[in-house]
Amino acid sequence: MAHREVRTPVPQDVERAWEIVRATLPPTPLVTAPAGPALKLETMQPTGSFKVRGALTALAGAGQDDHVVTASAGNHGLGVAFAATRLGRRATVVVPGNASPAKVAALRAFDVELVRTGSSYAEAEAHALELAARGARYVSPYNDPDVIAGQGTLGHELATQTSGPLTVVCAVGGGGLISGIGLWAAGRDDVRLVGVESAAAPSMAAAVRAGHQVPIEVGPTLADGIAANLEPGSVTIDLVAKHVDELLTVTEPELHAALRHLASAHGLVAEGAGAAALAAVLAGKVHTEHPVVVVVSGRNIALPALAEVLTSSHS
Image 1 (cartoon, rainbow, N blue to C red):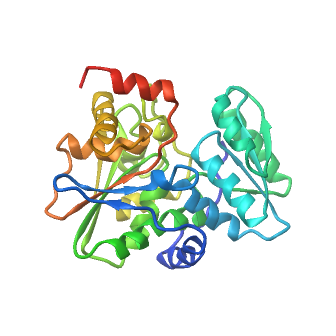
Image 2: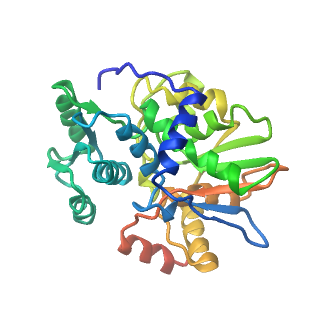
Image 3: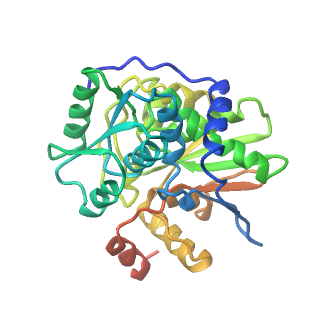
């Protein structure tokens, strides 16, 4: 994919996004337990994922007659579809022809144009970028200043739900969420940020080490929502390098254990990527003196996959 010039967001962008997001979305719960970390339940968003924050911010910034386009058969696509329907914006969501029928059905419930093309996400994305080149605005799942700022509004909610020093642990794929939280935390010296990648796809860690995007081989993982190569030139790479204190990885058995823990100890459903941050904490990989908040970032997992995890005996 050709390099796209994208403006790097600043902390003030998160402040503006907060005005937009809190006018539409109620705060998601922060669940505390006698033992273990507090859980920030982005699974309770109307689309089941934090991605709706960034989508609302991006589409609120578009004009009433502007056309936005994105490529996603997952949480970002659902966020854009929700935001377009809620705000009355014209949006096209491009999905690959092999997208799961359940996700396509979920997208069809919203007032957006749905285009199915190609046999991979890369082909769907290429078509979305072609549409954008004809006059629409392309909204990336993470390499977009408004999207990043919108994800950072999670930090503002935490500020109203907690007090004192804090370590925030969240999953990292393209880096939009942790970059946004990092911008929110830029003015606070008592917030520590820990990002968690799947060991099968440590794209961000590789990019931060190199100082730019580097292709990696992505292996199979339950955390498919954070398993991909980064867009070349993504502004999230420098933001993560600047604002994130540590990047960790978790294994497949650790992801499975975290999903089972959420179900058995809290009665919660999460997808693999949504449980990645908790997996790192449960595995003893997060070392901090601060109280820990784990972002449970999404719940949209296929039921057969969830059933297999919950009934498996390995740890």
